[in-house]
Length: 573
Image (tube, rainbow, N blue to C red; front, side, top):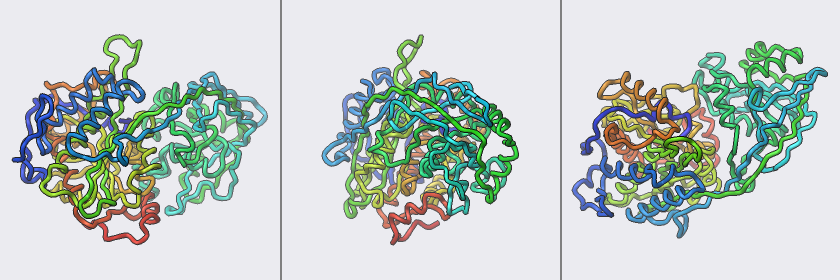
C-alpha cells in the first residue's frame, strides 16, 4: 500500500466478533447453509465471514512469512499459500495451466554522489543529491551522460486534448530538460472549472508528467516540489528516491522512458529561475491559464549519473473461475500480496508483517473467490482473482499483467481493487477512492442503498490516491476500475472515532513492524460488509451483459472507447 491509504487503513479498539451476514447484503448469504470445507484446523465456510477472513490474515501476516518481501523466502511462502487456497477453493490456474505469472524486474541504485550542474546565464550552480534535487533513470543503463541540455519551463507538463490543454504547444523539447510544476492547474489556482478543481487529476501525477515528457522527446524532466501540491514533504521525495529503485525491463513495458527524471526542491527552483531572470511565482500564475506557452530558461543542465543494475524476478498469482456462458469475458478482483519484508540490522522487531497492508486485501479476494465458487449457480462470465507483486515498489506486478494479460483487456469487463481494508467495525459509509470516475459507481450505489450506507470521497482528494494503487495500471489502459476503502463514519463513535483511529494507525503502524494482527483490537465486521458489497457488484456484472464505461470527460475513456468501438449497453443509474 502507498500513501493513498493513510486516511483509510486504520485500526480501532473494538472487540472482534463473528459476522452473520444479513439479507440486505446480497447474494453472498444464500450459501449460508452449505457444508463447510475442512482444511487443517480451520473449517472454511462457503460464505464471506469474519472467522475465515481472520484465518487468512493471521497466516499471511505471521512472522513465518517474514513480511512477504518480493524475492525473499517470504515471497515463496506467500505465493504458495495463495496458490494452495485457490486450489482448495476449486479455482483453475489462471495463467494457462499455471498458477503463477513471472514478473521480471530491474533493480537500479543510483550513485547519490551525482551532482546536477546548471549553467545559468553563464554562472555555474551545482545541485546536490538529496539536499537540492533527486534524480534517477528508468532505462536500465548503468551510465547516463546529460550534456549541455537546454532547459525549458513547461508549466504543468500536461498535454490533454480532451481538456483543450497543451503545455507543449509550439515548442520542440527534443533533447532538452523540461522543468514543471507538481499537481495540476485546478489545485493551485483553486478553480473548480480547471481540470478537477482541488481533486488531483490523472495529469497531476508525477508519473504521468515523466511519461509525457518522454513522449515529447525530452532528455530529462525535473518536477518542482511543493508540499501542498505533492501532498507530502521533501523528506518523502528524498527517501523514496534514495536506494534501490525497481522497474520492469524496458522490453516488457511499452511506457516511454526518460534518460533522467527527478525533482527539484522549491528553493533550488527559485534560485534557478531568479538567476536566469525569471520570476517563478509569476510563471506559476501564468501556468494556471490555458493560453500558457512554454518559456525557455536561460540555463543548461549537465549530469553524469552512474547506477548499479541487477535483474531479478517475482510472481503474480492467478486463480480463474471460468464463466458458464461467456468464459472469454472476465471481471477481475485484485490485491497485492507483497509488503516490506524483514529489515536486517534494525533493533527490536524488524519484521514488517503488513497485516492491514495488504494481508487484508488478499484475504478479501480469497473470501470472494470462496463465495463465488460455492454459489448455487456458476457466473455466466469468468472471474479472475489476481494477487499481484511489487505494489510497494511501483505497482510493477499489475503493470506487467496489463502488458501481458491472460484475458485480453478489451474482454475485461471491470477491475475491483482491495488495498488495505480497515478492521475498525461497521461504518455508515464506504470510501470510493477517485469517486466520480466510472459507471461501476452506479452499481455500487444501488448495493450500498440496500445496506443503508452511502458512498463518500476519500478524505484528501488533492492527493491523487486513485493513481497510487494497482488498479491504476488497468485504468490507464482503459479498463474501468473501482477502488474501495473502508468507511470512517463508524457506527460506534462516528467520524471522531474514525479520525482518531486513522491518526493512530498512521503514527504507529503504517509501513512499520507494528502492522500486525491483534485479536484484542480488530473488528472485521465492517470489512465483511464491504466484501459483501463488492461481491454484489461483481455478481451483477458476471451475470448480465453490461459493459460499464468511464464517465464522460474521464481521461481513460478514450482508451476504452478505442478498444471497444461498438460498446454494448452500459450500466445505468
